[in-house]
Image 1 (cartoon, rainbow, N blue to C red):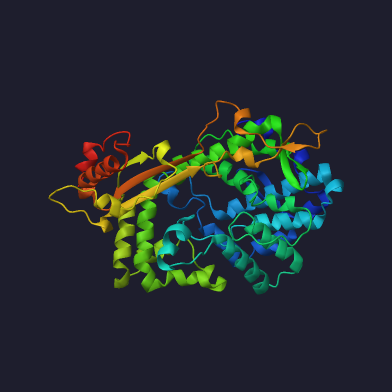
Image 2: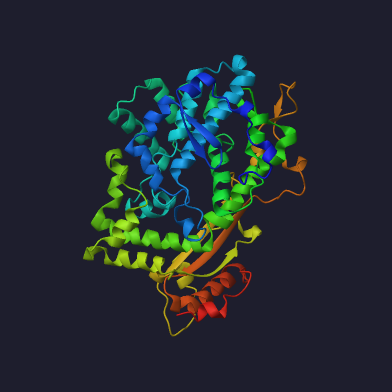
Length: 471
């Protein structure tokens, strides 16, 4: 299968844990990553609502399909994938440690529902909506898609009269928020390892990443050497924490390395970011007239907001939307904000790095016939890491020697392969020009800024002359 590098490690039928009794009452869909996914009656009550079906109109990778044409998969199929893997993970633990851990059907159902609904509150265009658009229109707001997912869960249950235990819903919401800054205290006094399956705030290994890493690689036509079935097979709970066999630490590392590669080559691709900046500007120009931001205040309105907002703006005849419409037309005609150049912040300067602004670049311009303005410049500060900032993610994970051992331990830097990186974070500064005729002047100002800040031109090469002359 194209989704995995090693076909032998796909989950075989003996590791598909839904019982025959469950399957009789389940519907199944065929997923292009996981094969047959069986949907139980409770999950279908959530899936067959307009709020959940909205996820079909949210592309998983936002505008990345304009650079990677195959990246048209949606939050809908990703959510089904996380639901399925969450069930596989907890059932695997139940099979091997069920009596020891006290895993019950109630626990399995709760984890699966959390996996299904973890992204139900996601905004349009991947993370662009909450990280780039909302902070500019809702000053001081700390809105997050995880918090909105929790609100949407309550809204769906109330609106569609879903018969589900209030305790289950409470734990589902806690699991959705578990890895966010808004994590709630765990209502359960035991079995805390269940909270690490969908959104792992403890060490970052969760089935959400398992699904989107493989799914995104497949959709973009990229190779994927991360084998999540291996981790599902060898994981074990020790001291209320999911641990992994020490001999498989390189497989764990590949999870984080593959994610970082996706960030560098897809999620923060220079052209993808250029299109994102244009979409943000279009939304900002349309917001006063369409009141887009107000949707985030009420779940009953929020579900109506999805990626089709661009088509709404593009086809509306209203004069008030003309500037936003023009930006979208530029995207359609590939008249994008021009990427001028980039540099990686020198390693010895990372500690005290301060984000670069458009003002920093404009103030670095020397005498010229054309005067740069901040509104014509976009600066992108791209941080890529292995989920733990400057730290090695393996240090936050506990391992065990073998299945006879009850001891868990972390693996320090000096005891891992010397072929692995010793630096776990990159910071890349990029500059874009909103007007093609300013590329040359802006590129020169960008070089001046580097010389003033670092004493060298940190960029790999000068901006190509053909790009400077493009008008």
